[in-house]
Length: 208
Image (cartoon, rainbow, N blue to C red; front, top):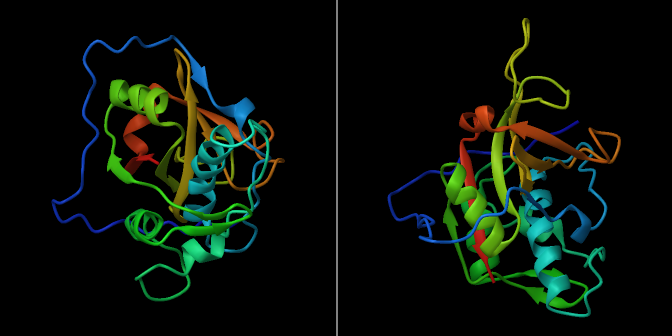
């Protein structure tokens, strides 16, 4: 089990997702049925590229032939090697998102890019960003290898930062897509209660 998230250095230039007045919000919404099989990052510190691939695959599939489950061969290492941090222990979301906007990543359908990205905060903006823009990405602490790995149990120690995809919500919380293979949680997915939202250190939305 590997992680690979490094906190972004914020400089005040980050765009923030603005709450949309009057947007009708359904009680629950999910992209699970519109995504390919959950990835397994194995021993590689590539959770940031893995998390971003959920949005990139979803967005590419809805704009082509409607094959919702197709994996478009997003080159995860292209994203990873765009990092500006030293060492081989992961990367920041800001590095990855900057690369996707300005350079793009190779895929089975050529270069895939995004137009813009922004940070997201509380419950309502998260729901709105999911509805308007598609899957989000976020960063959580890891204390154990359980379904709720961000929760610290007695004796647990912080072992790293981890990037995941946020692919839906319901009245109780968020649907989380991990990158530890399909044996984790429910075929690679787990659920976070709304009361655990403060565990996120960063959440980002993208537009293509």
